[in-house]
Image (cartoon, rainbow, N blue to C red; front, side, top):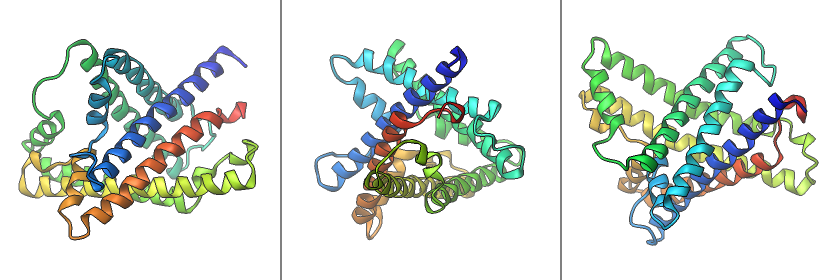
Length: 265
């Protein structure tokens, strides 16, 4: 195996494990709120902050920041190198564009972890400020609507991935038993459903922010989970979403253990 392949595999496996940990803890926070163990839900940033509030907090910020950065670099590698050989069809190009967007989002999350490590944190929510600034530009409202539409599409894509079993790609090369493969299929489907639910709530909040010209209406992952509490069936929805996020975290852990770059599988 070449040095280039070894580096790519490290990015894939370490990054997937870091992402799995974040989603697992978000799901546990959500379930903790349902059962009265936790007082609030949390998104990726809140999860990182919580992890850092212990005697080994600085080390956790460093390790988790590097892990999340590894995932960001892997997604950018997917976009530029196309290791799965998806080609240049419209679907493939859209997937590669999505890799760039996701990679950028996780790079920003890694930056947040490093900022906590070196400088601490202060100030308001940069996401809300960014949306408010965008709404102040000509056609800012229309652009925000388009972003909301992309987030909806991301949710639909997550559901499609689960129901079409695209998350089972290359699983036949992992030497799983029939029982293990069956459970991996189910865990992946439930997990992707939980992720899709969060995407849809985020998209709705972007729509509200654009309609009212108020950036503070935008809800990140943590706020989206809290938003479910206000619904008539809020706790039930939080329970389902929490189970989904935990399942997605487990799903990513499994992938990090078994998955390799396609040419090395």
